[in-house]
Length: 362
Ligand code: SAH
Ligand code: SF4
Image (cartoon, rainbow, N blue to C red; front, side, top):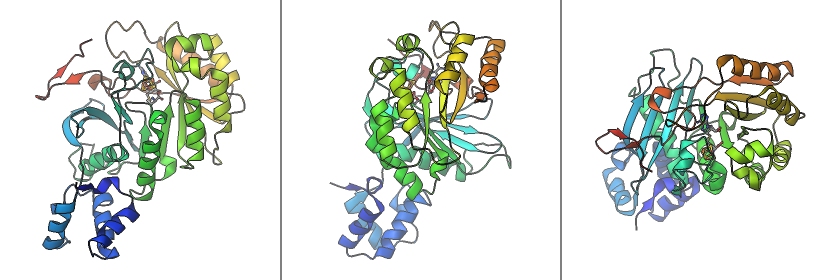
């Protein structure tokens, strides 16, 4: 069976090349092609001899994500639909800003956690992604960006992905070994700073501890979304297993390097978690934690979801309570809502091969 080179560590590629009677230098050339020049085939590796490429071709292959569709939002957000080797599909979202280019990546096909407000949750878990399927989202999009195939406003945006967030489809802490492996590739071979990588969780407490033990140094984001167990139980089933006091305790223990904070995401749902009392409770809950809060007014993933977002005045009033208590709180603009690329909307539409989106059935 052929070996997938992207599934190997750098040392394993060296070993592989040495077993073929090749030098360490040749191995480094391959590593460079894969991770610095984003080669998608041996043919791309122009400075390797034809005979070496023929040998490589017999023994190994390079896995790639197939781009099925790219959608561009009015605000410049791009949503990519990728096909995996087993024909399942995942999505990634590229969000250009004046000073950063963020890629939001998926860690699973679907998600098992069943948060009531999130469309990805309604897809249920299909399977975990392998590490190479995770970092390949970054490689594939970066390749398009470098080749100018992604239309970003000229001279305005960075031509390089600057930030990576695990906020796409799936619960990264339910697929931790592969996520950690992907993070190691991103930091070790692809050259991303750990400071610019954020792993977001719905609150899998043992996963937070394990992520800390993995010593990746990545940023942690926690989708909090409610401040009483009663309210959180209703919208996030995970809370029944890991209630708020355990979650907050795990956050307090998370080893934060100086100057860094944990991000708490808070989807504002009208009448459910948006009262002034909730805001005050949130302040109390975060006491003593170096925290910043991202307030995300609810995005309607499908019609008649039963949830709605508060008025703009309501959102601002909630934010003010946090700001008055000296908690950094920003209201997250919903980027890419017109192409269903905003938070909680991934997988909202199934896609046909012809590229026509169809609404999910059942
Ligand atoms: N599973 C992880 C990573 C996905 S992040 C997690 O839940 O943290 C997806 C983010 O989008 C989460 O913060 C979630 O709370 C938010 N979200 C989900 N559905 C949403 C919706 N309909 N509107 C706004 N935000 C939503
Ligand atoms: Fe899964 Fe996160 Fe969506 Fe909850 S919010 S269903 S954990 S992807």
